[in-house]
Image (cartoon, rainbow, N blue to C red; front, side, top):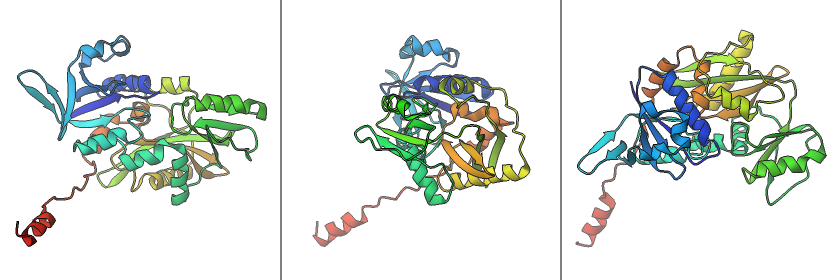
Length: 345
């Protein structure tokens, strides 16, 4: 299978995306892979597979590699006398801004490029945690109580401590703090506001059961990963998640009942259907008093959550064959022709 892995981007998660791409190089061995790097200045480079290592980017060696531009249907590598088109299916592996906020999705749609990843509307509702709450409220999906704060408008909180403070539009636990008493709140807010002008605040659920489930829709059916119960201390911090992105070994299946697995899968379907087609996503759930609560949607999970699937390569291939087709209007100029005829021109 031919596949172009698009990674990098102008984001706080830029380096995590690089780690994810290097991991997928190993996990998708046997595929005909291209690696397309989006630098922080939004320049695209074609990276030789042999150069897919972290120091290529940290030392700036990627800037010596071929430049790419976009054209209808794919990326193009131009030289003085010729050009080479790369019209493979693109796997969007840009975490955070650019990749998960809808920017890349809109760009790929604009150029009619086939891609694995969330579409623009799905990106909007999953990238900003406030919008995820609104989305869940509309679909009848349980989430924790929440409040918001803006950098220019601080309001008194009604939630009881302990609480967890998160930048609204950031992943990988960057800028996240657990606040156990009011005296710690200002520092936590200042930390979060370094990354985002909006902050989401929720109750901190100490000791609550948490489960991760990934999946996608293809060939007329849902395809689920195993359910994982992540090992954590207070919460999954940046370092633990960073290490997760480089995992290639399948994790152990959570020891849960069939009844709970069915509930998790049913909630996942509620989240996914009519919104995330074309993407492989991971949902993180809490289970409280036997009720399933959505914690977060990961529209482009680190290393695409390969460690949750028994056959990740087959999953990617199946998904690539079931991508949604965007309907495009046919432009005929009939209206302009009719006006011109009426005027005798």
